[in-house]
Image (cartoon, rainbow, N blue to C red):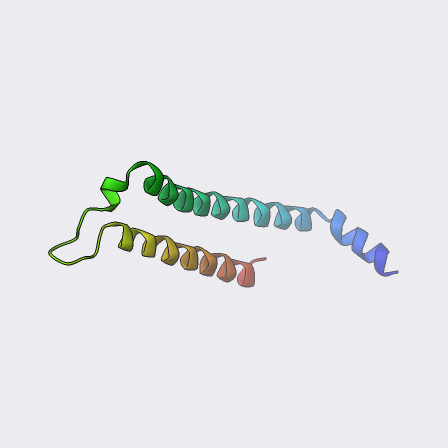
Length: 89
C-alpha cells in the first residue's frame, strides 16, 4: 500500500514541478558558489600581486577581506536555500 502511494505521489504533476524547481534552484546556487570559490582560488593562483595589495598603512592585504567575503557568501546562500526550502519545498 505504501509503495502504491509513493508511486502516485511521484507521478503527480505538481510534485514533478516542485522537484524540478528545487533542483534548478540548487544548481543555480551551486554554480554561484563554485564561481565565488574557484574565482578566489584563481586569483590566488594567477594574480597574487592583486591580492597582496595592502589596505591602508596596516598589514591587512586585499586577499583577507575577499576571502572573508567568500565565507560570508557561503553562509548567505546557505541561508537563502534553507529559507526557501522551509517555506516552499
